[in-house]
Amino acid sequence: MASTRKARVPMREQIRLINECRQSGMTDADWCRENDIAVSTFYNWVSRCRKAAADQVPPPNYGHLDVPRPKQDVVPIDIVPDCIPELQELSC
Image (tube, rainbow, N blue to C red; front, side):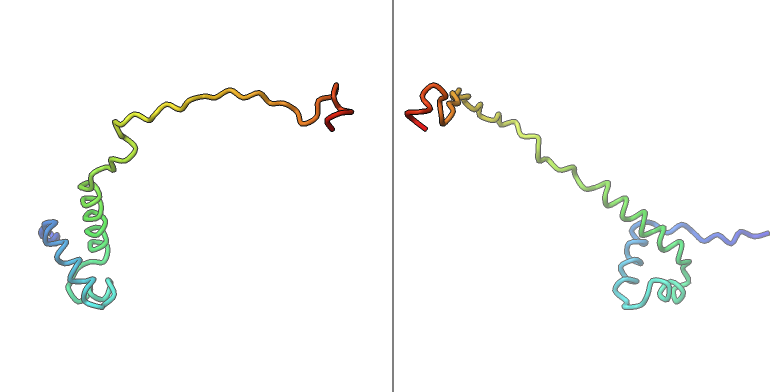
């Protein structure tokens, strides 16, 4: 029994084919049928290419500043009630 497996398509070629499909104006399924590519294979290519592209994106560098934040002064305050009970007759 002969193998019906097709040759592996390099990722660069997969990207070219994905772009060709997306720019064709056809649905993915119609384009795949017309180009003799299994829809499941096409979507596997899309998934792998997205993952490969995501792995190449550098991590964000925000939140890791070496600049020290200035220390804020703490100023104590006394909280005094508006009305002092002993002086209630005079001040309230």
